[in-house]
Structure formats: C-alpha cells, structure tokens
Length: 305
Figure 1 (cartoon, helix red, strand yellow):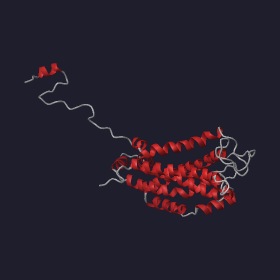
Figure 2 (cartoon, helix red, strand yellow; figure 1 turned 45 degrees about the vertical axis):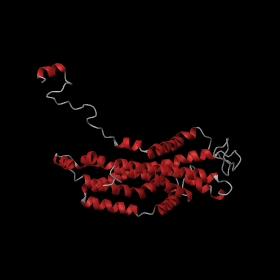
Figure 3 (tube, rainbow, N blue to C red; figure 1 turned 180 degrees about the horizontal axis):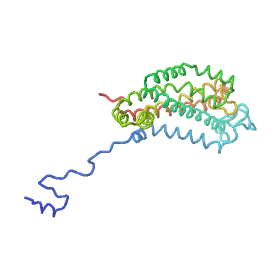
Figure 4 (tube, rainbow, N blue to C red; figure 1 turned 90 degrees about the vertical axis):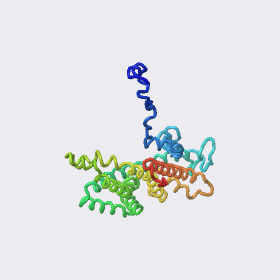
C-alpha cells in the first residue's frame, strides 16, 4: 500500500489512493467559432475567393487597363490576344469597360446594403425595443416605403433630378430597407424580454444604452445574412434599371453595357456575354455566401430532430 509520503516522493503524476489522475489534455473540446465554421465550408472556399477577385479587379483593375472611352481601335473586334474581351461598336476596349462597369455595379450593391442595414438597425431596433406607439408609427413608415414601386420612383427621379449613381443608390436604399428593419424589429422584441436585458434595466441603465450595447449586437447575426442578400438584390435591380436606360451614361455599369449590346447580339456575342456573366457570378457568389453564413450562424437549420 502506498503511503502519503511515498506518493509525494513519486511526484504529482503518481496516483493517490489508487485512482489515476484525469487526463489534462483534451479535457475541454474547444467549439469552433461561427466564422471558423463559415470559412471552412466548401461553398465559402469556392465563392469567397471568386467574389474577392471581382472586388480586387474592380478596384485595382482600372490602373492596368486602357481607357474605357478611347475609340481609336477597329470596331466589333472579337476577343483576341490584343483585346481579351474584344471591342465594342465604337472601337472601345471592352475589357476596360467591363472593369470600370464592375466598379459601379459593386459600389451600388455594397452601398445599398450598408445603407439598408443602417436604416434597418435604427428603425427596427427602436420599434422592437420600445414597442407601443413608437413601434406602431415606425412599422407604418416601413410599410409606406415597402409599397413604393422602385422602378417608377427611379423613372420619376431620373426625369426630375437626372441619372447618377447617388440617386440610384438613394432610390434603391429607400425602397429596400424595410425588409431588414422587420428582421431587426423581431429580434429586438425577442431580446428585450431576456434576462440580461431585464437585469440591465433593473440596474438603472438607459434604454438607448441597453439597445446599443445589448440588443443590437445580439440581433446582428440574421441582419448580416439579410445584408449579404441585399448586395445581390441591389446589383440585379441596378442592372435592370441600367438595362432600361436609367443610369449614369458617363459611368456605365454592367447593366448599361448589356443595354448597349442589344443591337449587336447576333454579330458581336461578346458584348452581352461578359457583363452578363459578371452579374451572374457576383450575384451567385453573394447569395451562396449569405446562405453559408446563415447555416454557420444557425447550425440547427436542416438538422433532423
């Protein structure tokens, strides 16, 4: 039988009383973070680099391509080594026009998404946390903007104020923010009834501080998913408006390039193929990344119970 003194002499690793020590390594399995789960998804490994390539090319590409307005080249040249994406009807380098058009489309998409998220957090957070008259009034305001026809509003604004990027972004943000506000409102109503919020109220903290420090941060996961989806929606709507001729003629987007390619669909296929493919790939990447982020933030979705 081993005595206490012998156990001390044997060291800390020796069993005392015949009971072996519990293993110290791997005792607590660390749970992967949400972003770790998201970044390890196969869809993320494919579409996140794709989206980053489009963003980097749109930001840095104009420094390495030619002028998008220079007309010194032969018109309607097919893709070749000299002109990788060919030329348009006026002899302009189509690669330069597609790269510059990506700036406008991506700028509109991300700007509209950020504006919608900001307005939605403010309106939805106030409505869901305070409730009562504030909730009713803000919900009515959101319903008013939600029923506004974006296309007709864009036509009227273009006729009165002219077509430019700022007006397009403002119109899209005005007509698209209510959906995000409804998500924030629902989350704020749920979170405001939780125990830690009640404890903060009992401690004497103000409503704005609780809303900013406790409610909004915990309501962000579904808001981030909705914002990622808004990027794709904004790019599609802006492309549709530009296709109809509602856009900045001095800074054409991918949709405007599709519009200008209509008369040459049979003899110059590349004029519609490349901007259309860019719109398709960017919107596809954004939507799949948003779906993957939703799965990472809500791991129980799709699980058999």
